[in-house]
Amino acid sequence: MRTITAHNEIDRLFAGGRRVSCPALLVLAAPTPEGADRGGRVLFVAGKRLGPAVHRNRCKRVMREMVRRAAADLAGWDVVLVARKGTASADPVVLDRSYREALATLGIQR
Image (cartoon, rainbow, N blue to C red; front, side, top):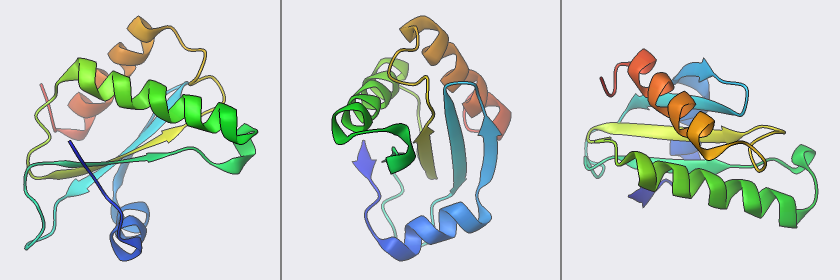
C-alpha cells in the first residue's frame, strides 16, 4: 500500500473523485493518473475538527488497519479515506463492512 503525498494529486482527488459517505468515514476514489504507480495508492485524512492530535492519529491508525484487513486490490485507483467523528471508536466489523461496500459502490471491488 503506497500513500499519496503530492498536493496536486490530493487536490485532484478532492475536486474530481467519486464519493461514498458512510457513518464512520468518507471514501473518495479516482483512477490513478498516467505515469504514477499503478499498484493502488491510499491517502488517510483526519482533520483538526475531529479533536486533538492523539485522537486524529488514532483515527488514521484505525483506517490503516482497516485497509490492511480488507486486502482489497486497489490497482489503478487512488483512494482517499476521510475520518469522521466515530471512526476511532467504530466497531471493526462495521467499519470493514462499510469500507468494502464503499469500494463496491465505487466499482473498485466486487
